[in-house]
Amino acid sequence: MPRDPLELFGNLPDFPGKTPPRNRPTKETQGIFAEDRLNGAKSKTMIVNGVARQFFTVGEVAKALGRKPGTIRMWELKGWIPKAKYRTQPPKKEQIPGKPLKGRRLYTLEQVEFLLTALSRFEIDDSAQANWVGFRQHIQTQWPND
Image 1 (cartoon, helix red, strand yellow):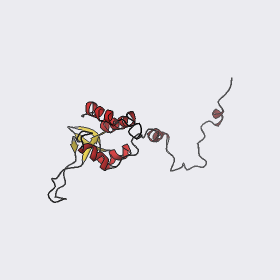
Image 2: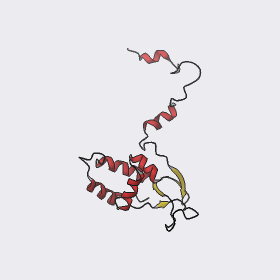
Image 3: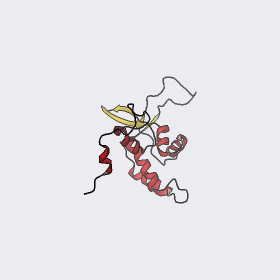
Image 4: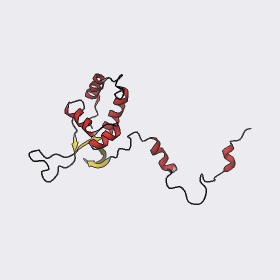
């Protein structure tokens, strides 16, 4: 009966010495790095109707999708994606004269994941294969509202 060669080492640590490496992920965080599908985009947790939810600003959505924030704003302006339902509190004083005060756009985790799957499904990153008509139609009919 063949034995697994790694069994010979028992419970030895995977590093020499007594101090573990600082830049190596631990077993608890190793799965998080492997599944980082949002390209390092960071969410903000906010409470809506008594429930904590994850939200992403336009900049973080752009980071998750591999785009620039202006691209996401343009998609919203042209109606390719619905306008953001949630916003942060507006600033206290006027920043640009004559421009109405609004808060930052916030997108839910479900909406960001939906956009990620839609980009890959309709091959938007490949200019020769991109199906923009299908992409826009899919977003209009299937967009997660909440």
